[in-house]
Length: 205
Image: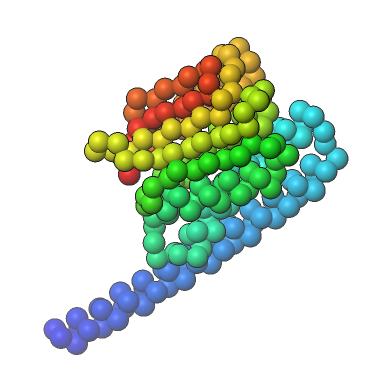
């Protein structure tokens, strides 16, 4: 019995090691493939202007958001959760790289670990909010604030960029997508103040 138990433990340990190696290799390949797509889109964008360039940047931002997540999973494959503060700071850096906008982004984000399969939706929500101001903002106050803080027994995300828009504008597609993504992370009490570009919702980590 002791011999069989020892063999079983060695077999489980070996299988676990192989599993982690497979995850490392998978995340590495996904990250590299996404980076190849990003490079191709960036090259194509050189010849585009106006709305065509904006549309491509919107797609590019989504792909980069997913790629940033896989970077964290590749670096820390044994941890299935990702720190929201670190991940959002990566998205802010990506935004500055692809946008000529002069908006200053001020984050106030608690250290919160979220499972990776949920975290990607938070990243897409943030990316969509930033994409909206790149395309539609007429605000004279070039300031974006995003906070994720403790709120009673849960967390509250608040985003504001002082942009105003109406439901009939093209930005309506972006706000509808944000609302659907909030549902995917089981967000509650979702609110949008269209006059100020302020979004709020609550969620559990």
